[in-house]
Image (cartoon, rainbow, N blue to C red; front, top):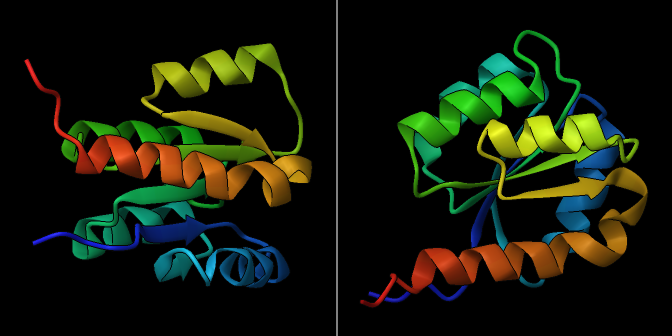
Length: 130
């Protein structure tokens, strides 16, 4: 069975940003949930099994890097996009080491988030052919 839209889980501790991101993605994605801390993210990822998770670096309880690391180990099919306020090369490297598939600055989300989700979703939908 083919899924027509990527299933996305959002994690950020700013409610207004969660709302804005849901609106941004509404036409092209199915937002299966939104959470405001890392502990809730881990539980939601397990329960909802989204295609893509958009997670803020600075979350209460469990930070975005640690959550990313745990999610990608437990669920390698889930793609994680880490978002943060700045473009620090050290953080970008840490995000990739933690298993993130993409890294986006919050100020670029309006332009870069949906294309990144579509690109990552395509990798979930198209298995590697040998």
